[in-house]
Length: 391
Image 1 (cartoon, rainbow, N blue to C red):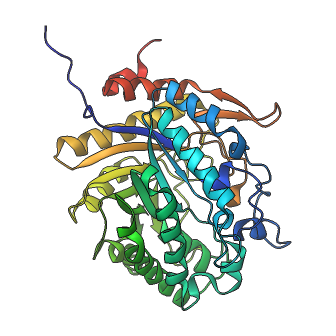
Image 2 (image 1 turned 60 degrees about the vertical axis):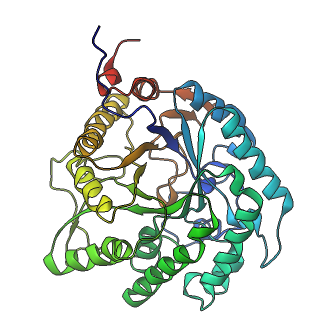
């Protein structure tokens, strides 16, 4: 009997992702909590209790494993671990040890992000990523994390989407600290590159996770955006792998207040207003694989109220990953964003990215969507056709 051909390798990593501030709740000691509560902040609402995963992590991980996922990406909250400069919370470190042990107990491989957007308030107040010793302070934090937890961190993301933190926080003012300064944007970009280099060797297997948009539009702006958000990171990439995080096309427009054009009228968009453009993922995979490091898709997903649309999105984007594998690209896994509906930064709780619905009117009850089961079927079989299999 002929065996059915797989689209993905047997040892492929299949999972979904979360980030501490978006799911834990009560992270009042970081800069995002402060930013959410500014009277003039353009934020849909505060994070509050999030989905209370700080307490519900075991049942959440058990659910994800039952749904067929063999890895899970999550982050550590710096402001819990180092609540004041040089002051370490052993309670927080012990908590994250239990969290990571639970991931392993559930049969999943942990993908741990050391910095996912948020900074301790004290770090932000002393200048954040513009402070002259920002790299040293970050390295001190990473050294403590590595000493305490690296035995449970088989894959480590040093800094999540540094380009987004730099661009949204220092160029567009959409994220903290809310600045709009081109020079600061470029300075912080290079600070992040130095910070990654300073800590990448502390962990057993570590890399950047980079947001890769398909950049088009105004030639001058597009060239600058391409270099400052992608090429400068790839020029001297250090690490054991690189993560790609892809969502949409970015069409640069000098006449737009945020420098980006809106999608053409009639184009399908997500709840975030992002154009659905799967071809950009294949283009991004080819580009990010060029330096020669193994690649993991560490984020890709859709905010939608229509779960059928989520399944369609998974199908067309996973097809791009399968094509990249067929071309010989060294891709080790695919991690969907996100595991659960959560706090989506400045957009609040309105966008629903989750494979698992969270009913905020019913004690944060978790409800797996059909897309969660469909994704699990592909994860178990390695065959894209099983996404739409019955059962």
